[in-house]
Image (cartoon, rainbow, N blue to C red; front, side, top):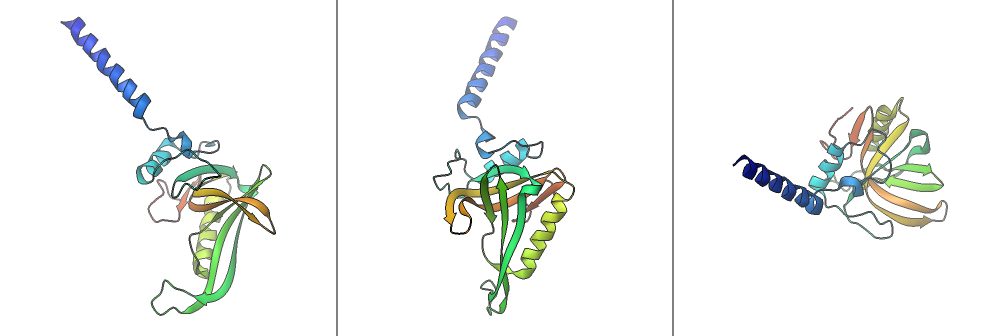
Length: 186
C-alpha cells in the first residue's frame, strides 16, 4: 500500500514537472540585460500578469509588451523640450507650456530613447525628472521597463532604439508612469 502511494505521488510530481516544462512561465524573455540584483521575478511576473509575453525582436513591433533593461546611471540623460500649446486633456484647452520627456541612453555604442506617451504641461516633466533624480541618487545602475523597442532613425543622432517608458527602478526603489505599478516605491 505504501509503495502504491509513493508510486502515485511520484507520478503526480512527474506530471506537474512536465506541465511546468511545457506550459510554465518563462519570464526571461522580458529581461534584455543583467538584472544587477534590481529586477526580481516578482517584477517580471507582475508585468506578465498584466501584459502579453513575446520574445523580443527589435525589428518587429510587439505592441504593448514590456521589457526590462538595466544601464549605468551615468549613461542616461534626462531631457525634455517645451513649447506653447493646447492641453488637449483639459476641457477648455488652455494654452500652456507643454513638454515631452525623454531618457536618452548612450551605452555600448548604441543609443536608446525612452519617451513618454504624450505631451504634458511642464509641471509633469519637472515632476518626473525630480522622481528620476530621487530614485537614482547614489545608485550606479538604473533599470527601465518599456514597450516596443523598435529601431528608428533621426538626422541628428542616427539610428536608435525607441521605447515608451513604463517604470524606472534602482536598488533604492521604483517610479512608474502609471500610479500603483511599482512593487516597491521610493
